[in-house]
Amino acid sequence: MNAHKCEADVWGTHRYTKCGKTAAHEHEGKWYCKTHHPPTVKAKREARNARWKAESDDKDSARATTHAALAEQKRRADCYPDLLAALIGLERAAGIAVMYADLGRIAARAAIAKAEGETP
Image 1: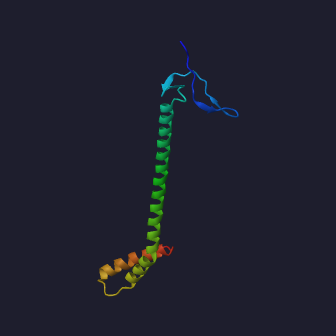
Image 2: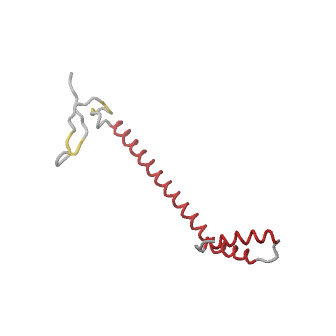
């Protein structure tokens, strides 16, 4: 039996040379070892690229989630002055039924104190 040698060009110490391993796979009339067999190389490259793409998509998704959370936090923080003004207005409002006014004032005072960093 005549053993074929791998015909793939590989980078040697200072130049390209032939691989020279015993070849077991034929592809388009040339013989290759398992490492350099073109369909095997292509399959490995596609698997590696798919893995890299999945990792990149995961990072993009995490980045988008973080960005959305920060945007929501900013949106809520931007509402603070309006909410505080509304609570102060509610506390000072006149003409509300006594029962509801007392409950509203107590809740408003507590919310104002909390928003301003004081204890109610």
